[in-house]
Image 1 (cartoon, rainbow over the protein chains, first blue to last red):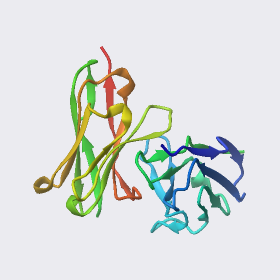
Image 2: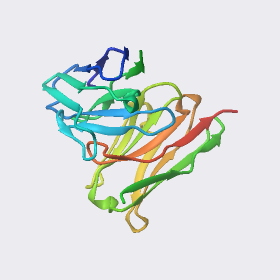
Image 3: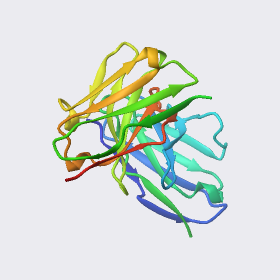
Amino acid sequence: DTQMTQSPSYVSASVGDRVTITCRASQSVNNWIAWFQQKPGKAPKLLIYAAHILQSGVPSRFSGSGSGTDFTLTISSLQPEDFATYYCQQANSFPHTFGQGTKLEIK
Amino acid sequence: EVQLVESGGGLVQPGGSLRLSCAASGFSLSNFDMHWVRQVTGKGLEWVAALNTDGDTHYQDSVKGRFTISREIAKNSFYLQMNRLSAADTAVYYCARRYHYDTWGQGALVTVSS
């Protein structure tokens, strides 16, 4: 199985800050990586897929980068609605696996 | 509008069975891979099972032999039959669409307890 190690587990930031979350796969995932945002009591929401493609309707302050085993989600200027938990996921091989999550909280 | 709506969650005793349903609207299930993902309250996301457009199925090791994923094209619905349930299966179960999970249902809570 491909393990996804996400860091940090927790980040405290302010509105307007730039935030970066990283995800490392235990083996190459051929860029089949997605990033999701989840708010309490809600289903996850797709932000980025295929490592860098912005899902329709997602603000352009979200971006994804990386290749092979190392990937990054960047939020360029935090907005109040961005405080949530973020997950990476690989869909290159079964079982599809998620990172453990990064909780983004207001400083 | 593309939408997924789960139903069938509830309380079940250990060793019991439950079938979750995921009704699709705004698209045809036959054209897309579909997945089940679960989440224990306060914990992370865990992929459970997938059904691709060719009818091939894949399962998380912990549910293999106990859970069965299927679809009914005429009803545009997708199912997860869960047998021999244990407390470890207690979670919110989500259905999701496509290889990149672009659409999710609202979730169905399954509680396994005596």
